[in-house]
Amino acid sequence: MPMNIKEVARLAGVSTATVSRTINGSDKVTTETAERVKRAIEQLKFYPNTNARALGSGKSSLYGLIISDITNPFFPELVKSFEDMAVQYGQEVLIANTNYDKHRMEHCVVRMLQRKVDGVAIMTSEMEEHLIDELSSRKIPLVFLDMGTVQRGISNIAVDYPAGIDAGVAYLRELGHEHIGFISGPLNLVPAQVRHKGFMKSMRRQGLTVDKSLMQEGNHRMDGGHDAMARMLKSKRRPTAVMTSNDVTAIGAMGAIYEHGLKIPRDISVVGFDDIAMSAFTQPALTTVRLPRDEVARVAFRALYGTQNAATAKGVEYRIEPKIVIRNSTGPVRG
Image (spheres, rainbow, N blue to C red):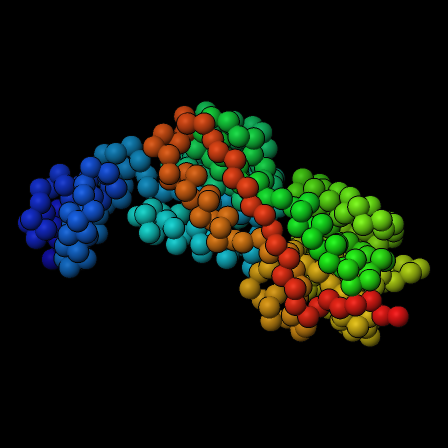
């Protein structure tokens, strides 16, 4: 027999209004009372009607999370951390995957509008200005990963990609490497351009020459890393080390290196970017620049949840500093 809100109130020893406030996340309910209500809900197996909640409060308790590529382990790890935060605060998450496609991004935004989300975390780089305007005009708060301009209702998580790239290049230079290659992401995407330029600046800062034949464009996926590395190995002078725009690109590049009969790091050192979980278990384990997904996810969630009137309040700029993680895919240059 289904339970109703009156039975929950009776068991918890509170009014039905207090039960409603607890379900809707009101700060007018004390922690002790809220816990009592939650225990009663669990004991009675009462499942609140979320649609009714949305109609009553004007809030859907639903956040949108837009990512670029669900097949890249970086994003599922970020999704997990974001959803963990949502569960902790009684919210739900609507996940959309753009596949680096601007047209698909448009469909993702339409889904968010149709579901009347309370806010959107945009962890991708395909967002066009008119889509931002569409969300902002409806007073939907937004938080971006490195692509947002802080203003009313819009926050941004700024990742210091150049510092991360610089740490990787400086470490390779310490190991004696001078002939260093780089595999970027698709250069029509702004974050890929930032990392590409950051690499060239880091090379100049270290007093090293950039060999254009060793600057290859990938697609942020393993096959792109493999093909870009294969092209690089055809250049007149083989690199002694290569840095990549993300870890899955690095893993693809490692495959191409082995196919050419070369060993890592004896013949070529490899440095990735992101530090996805599997990077510690490649053979050899991948040296990489760590971009902490759990921190990104926590900051993104709090940017949406932590402000009472997030749609009208001034946004916040959050900064995240990547750190190099040294493993076995890098070593001193031979000879």
